[in-house]
Image (spheres, rainbow, N blue to C red):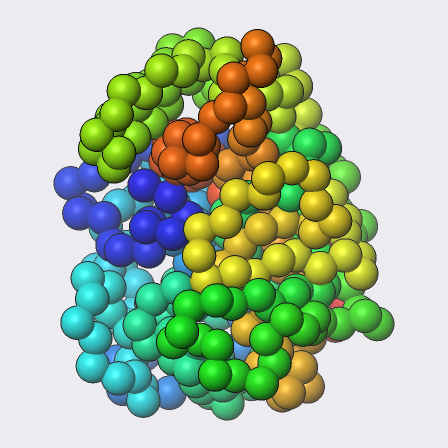
Amino acid sequence: MSRYTDMFTRPEGTPRIQLPKINWATVADQSAPSPVKSTYNGANAPLPRADIVLTSWTNAEWQALDYVFLASTSPVASTKLESEWNLYSRNAPASSSDFKLWGYYRLVTIQGKGKTFTVLLFKSGAHLAHSPWIAGLTNLFNDIIIDAQPSCILSLGTAGGANDSQNLGDVPMTNEAHLQVTVKDNTSINYNNKTFGQQNWFPATDLLAATQSKLFLPLNQVVNSTSLDSVLEAASQAYQKKTKQTFSFVVGDLQNKNLDPANLSTPKVIQCNGIPLLTTDTYYIAPGNTNYAALEMDDAVIAYVAGKKGVKYSSVRNISDTLVPSETPSGKTIPAEARDCWSSAVYDQYGLYTSFNGALAAWATIAAASS
């Protein structure tokens, strides 16, 4: 599993994962988001109006989004989301994939500074790296903006580490995204290799410090020698299946400081105002330090559409898979396929936990907003 393959809906029999209960009052006496009961008129009906749209992508992100915004007093993340959320398919093309287009939604309200915001939670089934490609993703967010008429879109979810200052579970937040697509189904556009965003706007940050201190999950609670051995076993099996070769590495060859439990006790929000993230249409692992806020696979298209529509945009991404070394401590080269399998296994083991932190950071920006 990886950020690339976790788009497909997981079976409802998937084991539930326990997440921390959220004591909202520890952050400036805040309260939990309130689910909104509304009439559902079917998948082909327009979306309800909302002040803000929060969109997520993978199943790990979806589970975290549901837990934080709808069920934070429950001890586990739900795996029955298809039956609990509303399908939205207006103007969507027929899909032959295992996920439904366009996606699923719910509504909540969040109390901000002097204003109650209606927030549309949206799990996208359209992705830059899958059919209907960039045209589908563009059409989806055009329709979301036309229907919901939001003033702001926040894209939240998992991301690859862009540099060695980003630990597992950290949350880089930015207002810009750079598009770099190479798949032939996407390259006919005239805005490839360009940066989009909101240079004059950034989400409210007043509650971020308290949120990360009081509510974030320290990843050293789940990253330990036992779970890292599980990551290694999953990576080894994937590598052997992919290459028909033996995976001749141990945890110490692949684990760096960003995945060391000793460095994971205080996950942090990283404010990257004016620093774009990188959006690709392939599963990209940085070969080393980059100047990007994070590495992911959709957001520049959202920033592009939002800019065209005059809607504010920000990305709230959680580091679900950190930089992977290109060689072992003894100087042995680690093949690209081995790095990819390790990165994917890290995501699969810890992606839901890191997404929990990202969803909380997104909530904090709304609860601190005044308009």
